[in-house]
Figure 1: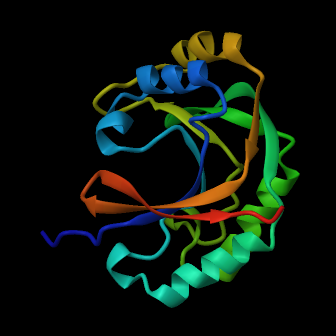
Figure 2 (figure 1 turned 180 degrees about the horizontal axis):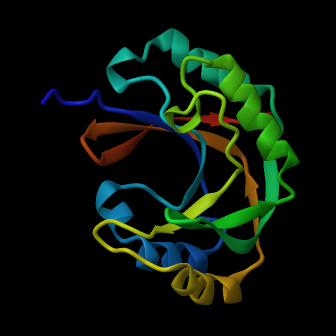
Length: 178
């Protein structure tokens, strides 16, 4: 079986928004700790294969985010993609959706989650229902809802890259305007 290319993801790191919520994320989704993936909200996954990144692609991202204002929202409640994951819902999500859709339009060859034509809502995954440490929706709701709402003001987007399968690192950050 051929190995898959190492992946990249464009995300908003939310670790500093609230230490208690970040701790809850680590408890509910401990494999993310080993993978070096912080509590975050994905803007585009997968992006380009890590081996294919060029200085031009990085500059295109830098320019894209430099033209956009910081993103501000509250993580307001816990919801789910049934059978898959529990997540924190950002509200309002208009600016997030606009940013995500503009990024997807810039890279039509990289549809969100590899699904052409999809329009997934902004979400900050709290844990998975299957895998090494499965959780239930009720566990996520009971652990996280008492911490909500959490205000997030995000001043930069983050490009993370796999450096080996299922192990990520920050490749670059892209400040928003203002």
